[in-house]
Length: 131
Image (cartoon, rainbow, N blue to C red):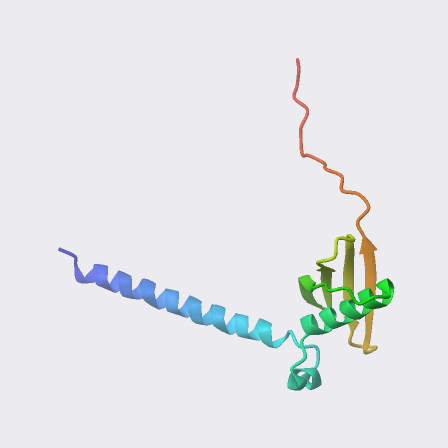
């Protein structure tokens, strides 16, 4: 038969789990609240990811000179030095990759376009002693 100490241990563990869960939820809320790049844009409902998709769409249409159907997707996003950076690609089979940067200090956006030329594989192998 379990003792009252066993129930006290379970209660203490449950309390720790709840404290951890609350802390994690608060931290997630803090992180999510830092994503918009300005309060004005937040009020308009604009997010950096939506902005990156819009800029990449415009760049692709301008570069290609035609209105093909394609989808832009963001593969990485980070809040960096008061601004943000997003890496994006498209469903087009052209190998292009885009880096969208927002410089908050200058209130400027930059879109860099890259093309994958080569993929080289390297392995972590060690030479075995043959003696």
